Length: 187
Image (cartoon, rainbow, N blue to C red):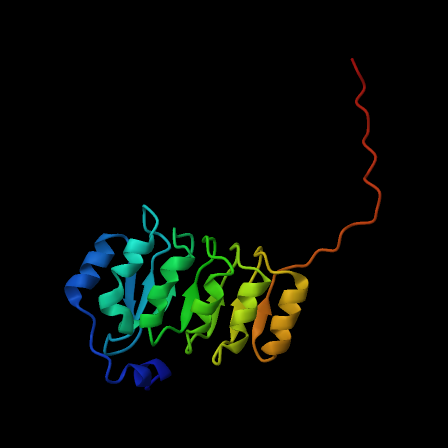
């Protein structure tokens, strides 16, 4: 059975084995996604100390091989995301619990193959998510605990009606009076 990723990997050179070994030694989990090993899942979320911009720059020699990238909980910031432009096969991106903000929006919008984007617990707001409205392949965007407003999320849902835009539970403020506390008897 030939998968979509196998078809996508045709013509992509295999990643440098020495570089992959060095990345693993740094604490990154690098897993082949295709039979020929050309497309990779690079999970940086467990590396200690957390992955930062220099580490992301070190991925440049295998940028064409990266299909799934997990930067969740890393020290990545908006400016570091310029490295994504060199990843033509990037399909899934985890940025949850990072310092990315609205400035990341245009950099993310340039990822034409992006299908999955996790922005949970980031500082991205309405301006940043508005830039995501043009993502041609997006299937799911996760925005829990971000700075995006209900109105901004609604606008994104309108712009991307086929995509799942998950903002987590929206709790309505309670109008009930606070419960009465029972006084303790003094002994």
